[in-house]
Image (cartoon, rainbow, N blue to C red):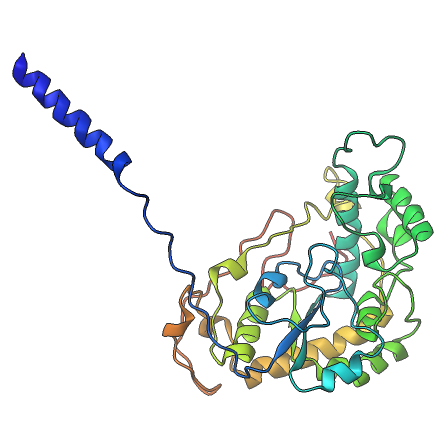
Length: 333
């Protein structure tokens, strides 16, 4: 009927109308709090497998002119042998996330194993994946600090499923090496005395020292140091580069115990734990006092003596990775 045709025409016009309207404007950028010291310029020290996701938080602030910000080439840039002077210059500040040493070493092993399982690009034959001169991953080669010949031997061991305690246990002192200005896998540090020297000469001057195993607390502490407010942004909870599994044999978890120790980084780790606990107390950081919010400008700037208590929110984590605030247990499974 004519009436029904007119109704159908009106309905079609109503359905087509939204397509004629301009798209909605993009949402405004999230509010960003100014630094407590406008002269600060950050240097992010990143030992391998200590939380690459932290880079996104550091990028919220100006970086030191000495720091390579390219990705992934500059990811694991060392401080440099003359960095002690740079640390003491006005404005230059080093920030770093650290990790329980044996846990970091084991995670490095499985990270390399995961990369070896990825498909080869066209035209590459006869070489293990991480021997490619132009690796699309851009990882675990010279940026990890070992010589190419050593790199090739280790990755052949990983590809042959040699256990971590045989493939990587001799590469101790990674975090100590990088604090001192050498590559992670360079084997420069040879004793706990080198770790004590790294702490005394450099690490104690760092603006921020975080614990990768306590991610929420570390990010809240970082934000408190940088802005004077305790909070965590939702995007800071994302794990951008999770390692798939920590099991040598997923079908036999009981047979996957890994017995390896890192006495050099163990000495450095003892200082990191003491420093982290001290800074947490100093800035009044606790799980209940660190809300997850997209608008930190709405939060009051409070001293460490009191805070508004919020529901505890944990970091989402991939299967087989440790949840936030979980204690480290031996042996690793």
